[in-house]
Image 1: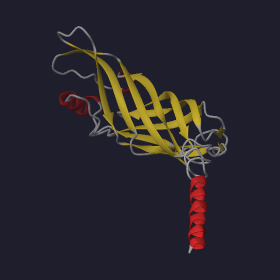
Image 2: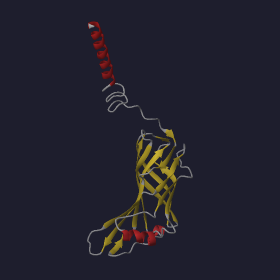
Image 3: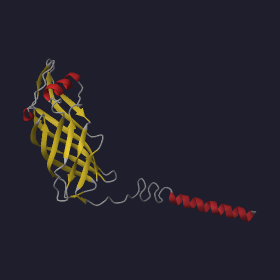
Image 4: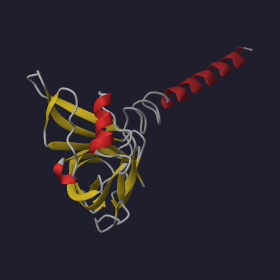
Length: 226
C-alpha cells in the first residue's frame, strides 16, 4: 500500500508539472508563443491588389457652418446616415476596377433638428427625385501596388461624385488603418465642395440668418478585405 501511495503521488507531481508548463509562459498561455502578451505570428505578406467591401458600422456625414439671428457665435450643422454601401477593388497594377462604387442613401440623413432635415430633403437635396449620392472612384494614391497587410497609410481617393443629378470630380483624403487579424481597413476620409457645385439650395428656415457656402462630406468607413 505504501508503494501505491508513492506511485500515485509521483503521478500527480508529473501531471502538475505538465500543466504548469502549458500554463502562463507555456505554448498558448499568457506570455507564451501565440498567447496574450507573447510573441505573435508575423502578419501576412502584402498582396498585389485587394478587394474592399463596406461593412455595417460605416457612415457618411455632412457638416455646414450656420449662423442664427440673435446668436453671436456660429453653429455646425451635422447630418449623418449609416445607409452606405459599396466596394473598392484595387487591381494588381495599382489602379481601381471600373465597377468600384460607393453609395450613400440621402433619404435617412438626419441631424439634431427635424425642421432642418425636412428642408434639406425636400428643397436642398430633393431626395424624392435624387435619393442617393454616388461616388465612382477613378484613382487612388498613397497605397503601394503591393498592398500592406497591416499598418497605416495616407490615402487620397479621386473620382466623380453625383449629387442632385450633378456630377463633379472630388478627392477624399484621410488615413486608413489596416488590420491583418480582422482583415479590415478602416478610417475617415473627407472632401469639400459648395452648394453651387451641385446646384443645391441653401437652407432658409426659422431664425437661420446665414449658411456658409462650404460643405464638408465625411465618410467613416470599415471595409472587409479579401
